[in-house]
Image (cartoon, rainbow, N blue to C red):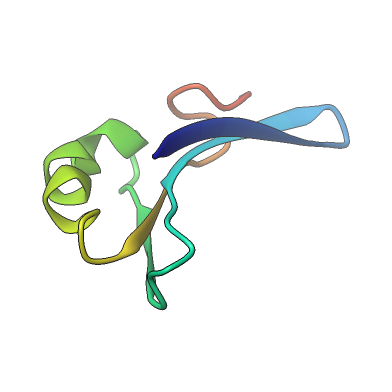
Amino acid sequence: MEFAENISRKFKNLHFRYFFDKNKKTTLLFLHGLTGTSAVWDEYANSLKKYYNIILVDLIGHGKSDS
């Protein structure tokens, strides 16, 4: 199941998406490079979500996170 959330701290919103299944024990965290967004990991996440919990983050200033 896919979820999307924002974490707000000191007037900044950090956007992240995650695929979570309580039966899976391992979680993978995907961080993009300097000019990317979490979307660069979509193909990998879609392939791996059947085996692992996945967290995809848009770092501050990128994607759907505040700048």
